[in-house]
Amino acid sequence: MITFVTCLVVLVASYFIYGRLLDRVAGVDPTADVPSKSCYDGVDYMPLPRWRIFLVQLLNIAGTGPIFGAILGACYGPVAFLWITLGGIFMGAMHDYFSGVISLRNNGCSLTEIIGKYLGRGMHRFALVMIPILMVLVGGVFIVTPAKVLTSMTHMPYLVWVGIIIIYYFIATILPIDKIIGKVYPLFGAAFIIMALSMFGLLLFGDYSIPELTSFDNMHFNAESLPIIPTLFISIACGAISGFHATQSPLMARCMTNEKQSRPVFFGAMISESIIALIWAAIAMAFWGGIEGLNDFMVKNSSDAGLAVSTISVTALGVVGSILTLIGVVAAPITSGDTAFRSARLIVADMLGIEQRSVVKRLLVSLPLFALGIGIAFIDFDVIWRYFAWSNQALSVITLWMITAWLSRKHSNYVMLSLIPAMFMTYVCSAFVFVSNQFVGMGACNEAYVYAAALTAIIAGLMMLKIRKDVKSGLGV
Image (cartoon, rainbow, N blue to C red; front, side):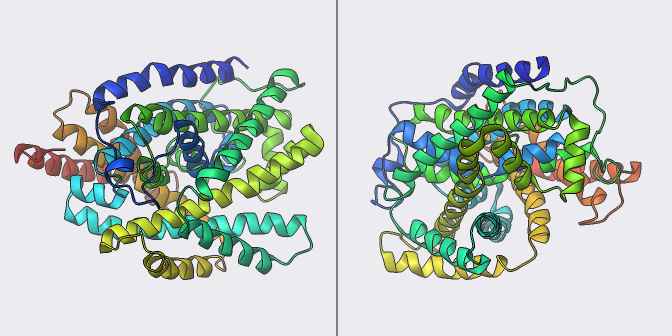
């Protein structure tokens, strides 16, 4: 319990200490103009209350990530607590905060556009291909997972649920942001928090013992094939750092009414997600009497994190647990899925310069994206998820380098706040390429890690040369 409580206190304290530091570094100006006023269109650019934006942002970035990822990460042991805490503060929250502020300062531009502005045309072209594909992958994943759960809970066929979810996604993507997302999602966001608090109550008052961090040993049942470096850092994305978050921040940047909202909306939502992940990692380790019991359950059930959530919730909380499971495993991914498609629509619209006031033009952009999403829903889920997980963290790498470029152009004394995470995540993603069977498949051997270090050095060198050149040429923020 000591490790868990310490991590929880550190996460909460970071909002007031590290979050305020980032406010000073960014130079938050409460009198500055904001996109919701200067670019108001009644569809995507629209002022919303701070509490509503926070809950929508939390739900957008969360999905099932801080639940499923935390449970899968818990199989490694208490070392997962450390990654969720340190990663969540110094990588994830910083990543989400600065990417949100940068979008806010650039008229709520999509991530692809601000990557292009700060990292150049080559990275812009790459992002224009990678990010919409990632968004459609997210949308496809979040068609499949809730449809499977709903099929298991009802007598309706899988394809019927797929159709219902796609129709809902289409409507939510096309309508103005205040019609469904702005009104209904805060309720789901609140329920998502209540679900986590219920699990927290079980940890405090139930007959559970949370393992302590006494070593950095890999306790995973498949430790040989899934080493902590890099696999743990890929498995727990939401809750630590996730590139997907930076694609969602522009949606809320277009609804904010004051730059002072940046810390609660961007930093605060990420810290909240880390707390949720910490709670789920803890209950997963404690519910089956320790890490060995959790691993036994996962082995017997093909690492089905959804079944783990359902078992914990229903067993510990009864009917209430069933309702919370429905919200957490069905509603949460659906809400992330439709905002993924919405982000893809805005990215493509920004790229092609297609205004989005007109319903016809929104349809023109959205239809091809949904056609791809429907196709993905019929591909083997394991294949989708493996490549989504890595590409998601690869996107965080690009975003971290973009933030480093922005801070450098500001001539900030705090460039290291993003530079160190950028290099760390570059190494993680490079190591995964060499270690994992999804790519080169060398396994956790010394050569794989040396090659990863060499690739990281090359990428970092090229990035720093580009950034230094732009700073010397006088390019501003």
